[in-house]
Length: 434
Image (cartoon, rainbow, N blue to C red):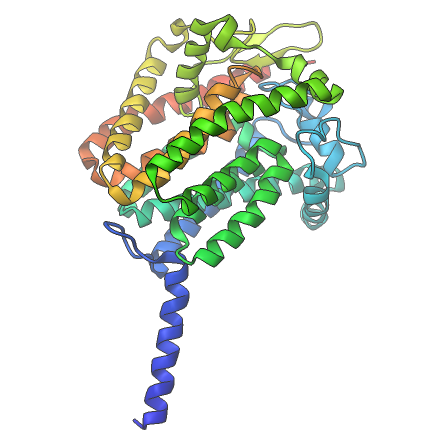
């Protein structure tokens, strides 16, 4: 081989290695990502998208169904209003919290609906198109989480078991609906995974900046996650990170109070669902916090809020979470098994030094949600997509060192409980006829 040919091959090899390392450079105690890992993650993402599209249809997100005729049928969701904004020309009544929702997603939803017209009727396509778009973005987030699991050394069999659990999460009932929750869930997951896997500082910062606009434009609080990831990347000292967090908490509270007092729109929107549980009902706030850790993964059988002409499947039929008696029997076993899986994986993940800074991001976001949704908001299942991905991220980051027999032992009651819950939700929906 001539020197010129050798030099050319060497340059090509170096360039290829650089391109790969910019998106998958292994850290300490991690697994290099190759073509096989990307194929597995893509397959999981595709399966997730297909499952979510099926789930939304199974739950009744179809043309002419009750969910499309009025809001607040399933966990306080406003699916019909969202479709009216994306496919129709309705104005957003919530622009203050979804500032760029219409500019970002109306055209893609209409484009996907147009494509679906080649397969189904125009009316059905107007619902199926947004479903495919929303569930595709959620599926992209799940694919990225699968890639994170493989990067953390989780073997394909364990990965398959974990993502069966994740696809059966009770929170997927709202993620799968054609509304902004599935979009936010996918983008938030993707932002976190980008912060872990992309080794090039320039690519990482650029991607997170774009995701800040997409997540914050879709739901204003979601923009915090990529910002937290960038700050976590920029500040290396744990002491400085904790100091910043301690400063950010009172600053955020103060800024929120100021906005509340100067903006009539915020007063009106916030006042509708303000609860202030931490100060008014601290024991109920603790109850909500426990629910936030288990309800997205393994919910009990739901209740039904009975209002004339506005019956709704709900986990808060009396404006408070279902009591502990809802967890009796199989659902209790599933909830306990999920808690064991979550906290054992957390313990194992904390042992891996290179994961600790990233776990801090997850803790910060989960902490914000625990505080925020105990001050404002009802129907936790509606908002659960904001943090359900955090619970699964913790699991996949620590699952490598979990004994397979233990995982299988926990897998059975969790999945059995999840299937029971989905069937119970469907059964409850069938009792609502108007």
